[in-house]
Amino acid sequence: MTNQQIAEDIVAKFGENAHSFEEPWGLLTLTTNRQSIISLLEYLKQHETFCVNFLTDLTGIHLPDNKGAEFGVIYHLHSLENNVRIRIKVFLSQDDIHIPTATTIWPTANWMERETFDFFGILFDGHPNLIRILNIEEMDYFPMRKEYALEDATREDKIDALFGR
Amino acid sequence: MEDILIPKNTSDALALNRPIVEDTEFTTLNLGPTHPATHGIFQNILKMDGEKIVSGEQTIGYIHRAFEKIAERRPFYQITTLTDRMNYCSSPINNMGWHMTVEKLLGVTVPKRAEYIRVIMMELARISDHIICNSILGVDTGAYSGFLYVFQEREKIYEIYEEMCGARLTTNMGRIGGMERDLSPTAIAKIKDLIYNSLPKAWAEFEKLFNRNRIFVDRIVNVGPITGERALEYGFTGPNLRAAGIDYDVRVMEPYSSYQDFEFDIPIGHNGDTYDRFMVRNQEVWESIKIIRQALENLPEGPFYANENHYYLPPKHDVYKNMEALIYHFKIVMGEIDAPSGEIYHAVEGGNGELGFYLVSDGGRAPYRLHFRRPSFIYYQAYPEMCKGVAISDAIVILSSLNVIAGELDA
Image (cartoon, rainbow over all chains, first blue to last red; front, side):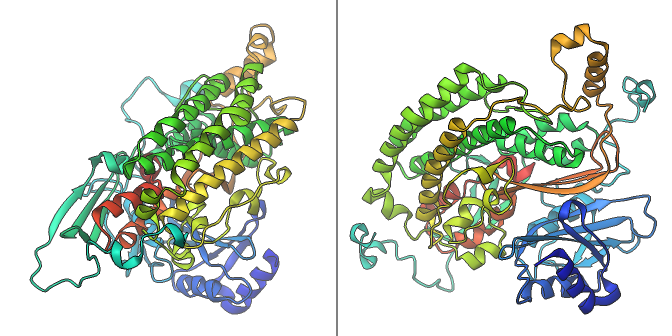
């Protein structure tokens, strides 16, 4: 079973809802939208030959310059039977940062989604307990967003220009 | 196994199966954040009906250190020190996993000798991780002496780390492109003494003390079982998943660092209970010994680092005499080397399971986004389900056998 076969199968089933197929370092990567993500995950999990039965990782990314699609949710799936990994991305706009939860398919998505919410503020609709997990509950911002620079902006001993950056 | 187990009807002294009466008064018990039995800083709020656990809720994040955020400003080689502090029981595996991720991004091919040295260090780390988990499981059930016997072996492993990199716990071992130093004759002597002599003896003795010890076996058989299917749904990996009967091991499925050169078996259990987790870890120690023996016997000659001036620090004596080496030294130390852009997921088999690094590089000196797939964080969420309806003493044993490491939990 090759990446090509999986990609063709997904295109046949989901058409334009699955696009931007890539293969960086041999890992099949595709982008979909939030309307089709759950059905795509379910389809891959139920598929008789693909058996993509393992959710390895779920995380977020913030791309502030990517207007209209500032936030990404990245799923890493693994078919343990065929030993094939798939990466699925969904991009969301800053103004409407909702995506359906994957906890209905994999209970392990619970904490992964809570972590993603905690750091990026991505709202997983239908999640049973979407509260902060690693940061304190009183925190009123989402620290992994790019607008929160790591270091104090007033510091003068670490000016990038001095290092030619 | 049946021959040494207490018959089922006499072992139910606690009457754990009785139904909850309507007006039962529940007790809330805080197990943690700092409790000797949690072996780390995290909290379990348990709702108890007498000795029986009705439900549990976890609070984590007490030692969250924002590694993913910090990593976004650090040059690649400085992130190694962050990975140390995740699963601090087996730091070299984290270090090597990170180096391999960056090497994959840079397209660096590491010489065979460096890969073999890495395998040796990673397997030593796995052994020390399993020594901690299994011997502390003994301590939690009241058997202290096994712990004392095998911790001496862990000390010897730490001495080997010291020989290799100067540090013991947070090792920062190896570099992007290879190792920072070759195996010294002292290190080889120490490893040989460990794997041919002292460790097999100590581990055989440890197994003799525990494996068919009736008191111990009664405490852990059928405690906290999880089916393979449920374990997969909960994202279990590593020894905990293999104990549930699923033979997933990253070393075999996606061999990295020349693991395909070695002959070893993947031990699996079939009940997924505490006993199986204990036995799988026990057996993995033997398999690791086997791998280290093969690696030492077939250790290839040659350089222990890749010839990549851009990423691998030049030898110090060259820096003083050679202009080019000085330039590279400066650029690497100041973190002025840009990496190519790309998106990578690289996984290694950590002490607790699949340790993954999801790295997005935008072509700069630091990662644009780095996410650690931390096995402890992912499987610890199954804990309330596993300890539902068991006695408090069993819940401690289940927690201990899952080997949740607080550093890896919180990152």
